[in-house]
Length: 85
Image 1 (cartoon, rainbow, N blue to C red):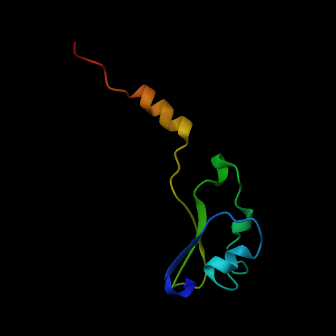
Image 2 (image 1 turned 90 degrees about the vertical axis):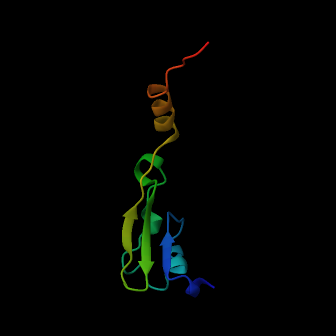
């Protein structure tokens, strides 16, 4: 069924050849080094490689990432004022 998906995304993987399983044969040789994405959330979160029908070379991408501690800080800092009885 893998060939039915026109756009494929691989995030961090453990072994060298696993990106080829997701993106297709030779993806690692063409630059999809998903096994080198850092496991640390501050440096590696949201990083992946995307491959689609219109390109042979995978593109490295990074999605936006907000940590739990950032969300906690934002909730405390911008909490609405309590009003009422």
